[in-house]
Structure formats: C-alpha cells, structure tokens
Length: 330
Ligand SMILES: NC(=O)c1ccc[n+]([C@@H]2O[C@H](COP(=O)([O-])OP(=O)(O)OC[C@H]3O[C@@H](n4cnc5c(N)ncnc54)[C@H](O)[C@@H]3O)[C@@H](O)[C@H]2O)c1
Image (cartoon, rainbow, N blue to C red; front, side, top):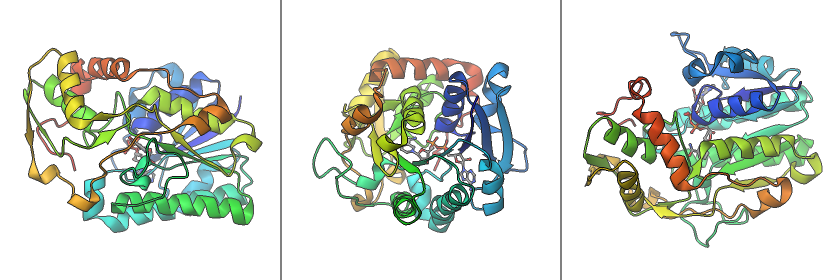
C-alpha cells in the first residue's frame, strides 16, 4: 500500500480525491488547513472505513515546516490547496499570492529536497482566459484575467521552472470547471441547485452568457489519479487539460437544471455578482486529448448524470443545512 499526501484535502475536489485514492488502495496523509474549530471540512462526512486509511494533519501550505512534515516519506503528493474564489481575489489579492504562489513554492521545495517521486500540481482553465481558439489545447496562450488566475499561473510557472532547473518530478493537471456534491456556493451549479432546493424560484446570478466545460467531480478525481500513477516518462514535466470537450452557457445550464428539478424559474441578474467586463472569461472548452493519450483517462459522466447526482446531494436536508443559500458567498 503506497502512502500519498494531499493538500486541500478537506475541500470539494480534495475530499473526492481522498475517497478515490483510498478506493484504489492508497494510505492518504491529508492536510487540512489549521483552524481553531478543529474542523476537518468535508473529510468529516466520509465513511468511517475510508477514514481508517486517512491520517489528517492540520497545517498550512504557507508554512514550509508544515508542508515538509506532510509530504515526508510519501510516494506522491497531490497539491490542491488554494484560494479559489475569483470575486474574493479582487478584495484580498495578497492572500492569493501567499497561498497559491508561495504555498506552491513550499510544496515544490519539500518535494525537491525530500526526493518525493511524484508531485501533481493543480492548475485551472481560468489561466487561459477567454478562449482564443477552441477547443483549448495546452498550447493555448495564458491570459490571466483575474488575480486568482494570475496567482494560479504563477504556481504553474514555478512548477515548470522546478522541473527544468532541478528535474523535480512534477506534472500539472489543469481541470476545467468541476462540479458535484460538496462544492461551495461560490460556483454556479451549487448556487442554482441549492437555491432551488431551498425553495427559491427566482434565481440570482451573475452574467448568463459565458460558456464553460463542466466536468463531474468523480471524473476530475480520476484524472488526478491518472497523472499521479502513470509512468513518469509519459507525464512528468508536462501539463494536461482535464475536461469533457462539452460546452454550455450559464443561461442554458440554469434552464437544464430547472428541467431536471422540474421547476419553473426566473433568473435575476445581480450587479454585485458581475465580474468587471475585462475580467470575465467568456468561453472555456477543453481539448483533453493529451491526457487521454498519455493515461487512457476519459470522463465517465455526462453533464446530466453529474447534475442528477448533485441535485440528489442538495436535496438531502442534512447536506443543504451546511449551506447559506440566502447569502452571496463571495
Ligand atoms: N472547482 C473547480 O471548478 C476547479 C477548476 C480548476 C481548478 N481547480 C483547482 O482545484 C483545487 C481545489 O479546488 P476546490 O474547487 O476543491 O476548492 P476548495 O476551496 O473546496 O478547496 C481548496 C482547499 O484548499 C484549502 N486551503 C486554502 N488555503 C490553504 C492554506 N493556506 N493551507 C492549506 N490549505 C489551504 C482550503 O481549506 C480548501 O479545502 C484548487 O487548486 C483550485 O484552484 C478547481
């Protein structure tokens, strides 16, 4: 049984990745961001038999000592910890640099000096900005339209530089928009589903025109595992898009969710949810053929199948109770 380390383990994608890794026979060291409530985030909701294979440590990626302690002796590190909300990155950009850039530097340094055989670094499709050509391949220009995107691209460039300079065995996964159970209401799909599940029929949203390539979180977790376990010569030193190749506008997505939940909706555009015009990414759709060719990964859920599972999650009152559906969650 191999031991792997995960940062951002208590978050949305991280908690699904932990489940996936345990299901595939790994022992997981999970970093949960230190907090005075001793909350383990979504890890608290995992099955007991999953948690039997998970060692939780409270820490912070901004602190080199806590990163070293986490990764020491592991076979692979999955680095997902980040600040992710675009609107909050307008308000608190310094914290994005500290977490997403310096935090990534700390992980790279630990992996380099402790001779960890594989690091999977997490990028984001937001680093591409509005698509200049579609579908977006890994050769598409990087155009960072928000402080969040810039901080993630900074981490990506550091990862590339560590591979070039020190042969650090890093592979970068660049997921497109991921959705599913446990996602926060900072993202559009939980925002729509949770509002409906809470009884609202007038949905409040930002711009309805942008299109996205939405991928179900279990497929994202499998993509992480695929690059974490593929032969080094196939993946190390490379960047891989992870997405479905499908595309839907936010407006059409709301219509689809309304249909699946069998409700008539009206949508109200809320000024405070609009990004500044030049910061809005209007179009993202993935070409993931490089990942498919290198690892054989392929998404296993259609958009509708993923939405059904997400709706089921939010319809469960104990899950919905964890959300503040009447607030704009920045
Ligand atoms: N959700 C998406 O659509 C999407 C798409 C592309 C890339 N990503 C990337 O995937 C990763 C996970 O995102 P998510 O959607 O699960 O968001 P999330 O907010 O649920 O997860 C991020 C996790 O990082 C942790 N974290 C934040 N600051 C930390 C710090 N200083 N030290 C330690 N931990 C810290 C948070 O507590 C949280 O658990 C991020 O790197 C994000 O940029 C997400």
